[in-house]
Structures are given as structure tokens and as C-alpha cells.
Length: 321
Image (cartoon, rainbow, N blue to C red; front, top):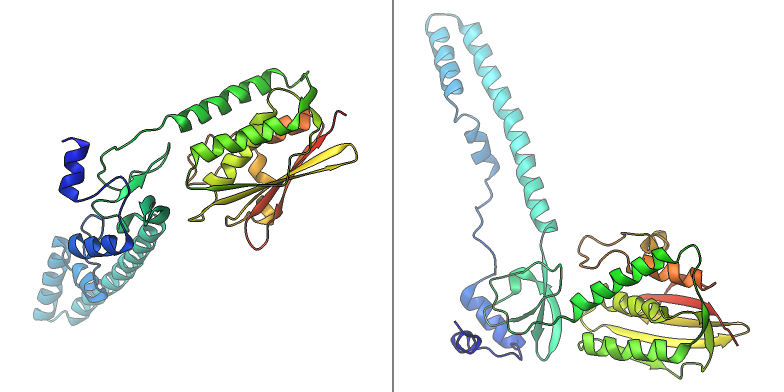
């Protein structure tokens, strides 16, 4: 079925749904999830402990024991059966509760286009006609029809891997030279605006017209930091603010986001090779590459808390003037 036919059948468009339409369709079609068995009650779990042929045999043996006058043996068998039911029932009840808790932890999220903007919602709230945004590594939250495909994210991952290999090759003797700072920052901001149209990128003031000790991979530093500020933001409306300040012999570039922030105990760990969150769809080498390059240039990179929320990545580079 063609895209136009699907859109007509679902009464949808590439502009997505409104919140009112999504609510109406959720009431009409229900939640986006497979049917689930109703959790068993404690008394049903208790009764199930006796649904076993061996239990039937023991129950008959207890009855026969009482009938022939061996009351003690009969009572003992019944006590064993009851104790077995209590222990088995308690274990199954605990397993049921753990399974329900695990299902809550495994709930997935989906990024949809509603009311003219991108929103992150529970996958269960996706309704027919929603426009779902997918990127490499995302879990597909429903039966979807592809509307438009972008190769930009594939290019980004390829470029990061290429730069990583080049960095490994030059670790022992990196070549650095005076490199203009403004083009490296401004061009990457413009590319991020194209790649992430739902995010806002702000450049506060002018980038100092200075040269820094770096090389042609300087743009890689800012590309990965800008990508990270959006991809791991968590806000429905990501905002990334870039500012620069030149001091004696150095220039400091600050990349701030409005995400959920990074705990103090994780601020250094995020720069380790292969470090990424459970829900991350990145390569796990972006921030590691940032630190490697900045340190090769004789600079440093660290993280501080943003106000009122989010993180600030600070890059300190030596000037070549």
C-alpha cells in the first residue's frame, strides 16, 4: 500500500496529529500494547498449588490413613501439603510481583510529532496516524510505515568512526598547527540545525577571531559535543547554547544544554571509551574522542552543572596567537 493510501486510510498527514486527535484515537483504539493476562490473585495462586497429580495421590493417602485409623500419619501428610502450598504460593506471589515490576522498567519511549512539535511519550500512547521519528538504534514502538528516510545520522556515525581511527593513528605524534576557531564552531552549529530541526541552537555573542593549537579535526570536537547535547537531552524542546571567551593564552568554549544533567559521580566517566546509556543509540566513542583530541591539542575538557537544569561542557584550548 502506498504512503498516500495509508495516510488516507488513517486520516493522517506528515504534519502529525493534534493532542485532541491523539486522545480521541486512544479512546477509540485503546493502548498500543499486546493483550496481557490478568494478574493472578493470591487465593488463585494458593489453589494452583494443589493442581498437581502428586498432590492428589498424597491427599488420597492422607484420607486412607485416617480411614484405617492412622490419624497421626494422615495429619502429618495434610500438614506437609499445606506447608508446601504456603511456601510455593509465597514464592509464586513474589515472582508475579517481580514480573510486574520488571514490565514497568522495560517500558519503551517513542518520539512523535504532535501539535507541530516533537514529543517523547510512552510507546503505549502511540496511536494510528501518529508520525513517529526513528533514528539508528531506536526501538520501533509500533507497526509503522516509512514516510521519509534521512542518511544524515548514518553519515554522522561514519564520520565519528573515521575520526576515531585517525586519532588512534596519530596518538604518538599528533600534528597540530594554528587553526581558526570561528569556522570550526559556526559550521558545526549550522549542520546541527539541519540535522536536528526540532532543537534550538543558540550562539551567544561572536566567536573570538583567534586561532588555536589544533588541526583539521577540531570540528569533530564540537560536532560530538553538540550531538551529545541533543541526543541525550531528554527534554521535549532541546535548547543548546554555545558561548566563547578568550583569556590569556587560552579560549574557553561552553556548550550548555537544558537536559536532565549528569550526576557528579558520572561527569568523568562519560568520557571513557564505549561509555553510553542503556537507551543510547550512539557509537559510545564520541565523548572519548572529544577528550582525546582536546588533550592532544594541549587543552582540557570538563563538565559542570547548568542552571536551572542540564549540563555545560567546557572546552579549554590554547591559542596560537
